[in-house]
Figure 1: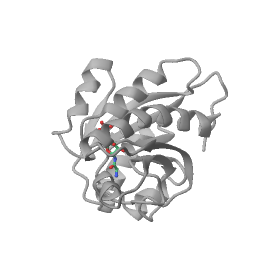
Figure 2: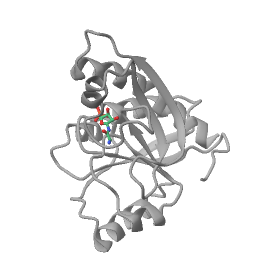
Figure 3: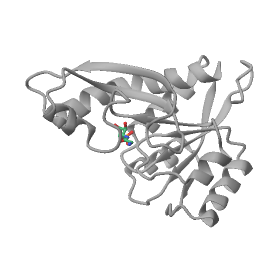
Figure 4: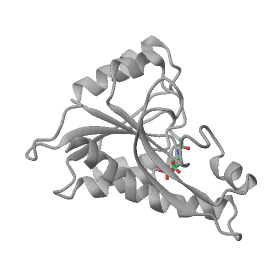
Length: 192
Ligand code: GAR
């Protein structure tokens, strides 16, 4: 991983598929001096991603490419990342699984935020499953991306208590608040 020297900020690309609240939050933190990164590219696999609106709002370039895991598409995306001198990819609600080839080409420089206390509840519908299993705690994890789904080295994790009143909507809200705390902190941790 290229580290920040304190003078230069590390250029990142944020990959999204949806609302983009984590994206918005990362953009906010990137403007603080203490956070050693800038968001230089917003990438989405779909033009339906609501978070794409932050491209215009914050004047950050966006790219929309349907992700089909082919070598051709991987090359196209990697070319864009290289052109923009992106050194770190932050997956933030990106709902596609990157190909092994892509992960290899950007090795050690892709991180993800996942809405569970990994290694518990990899994959989808984490909150529904946690409530169904009567877990006392839920949470979120920032981790490195490897070719094994939601299994790379953990960078930061935060717990929240599941109350009796919680359904998966209220739990998702509670967890998302914590996501907004740990994602920028995790980036700072690995770049400093
Ligand atoms: C977040 O809760 C994130 O952890 C989750 O999608 C949501 C995106 O919200 N990611 C995954 O489930 C990845 N497997 P956002 O678009 O508002 O940032």
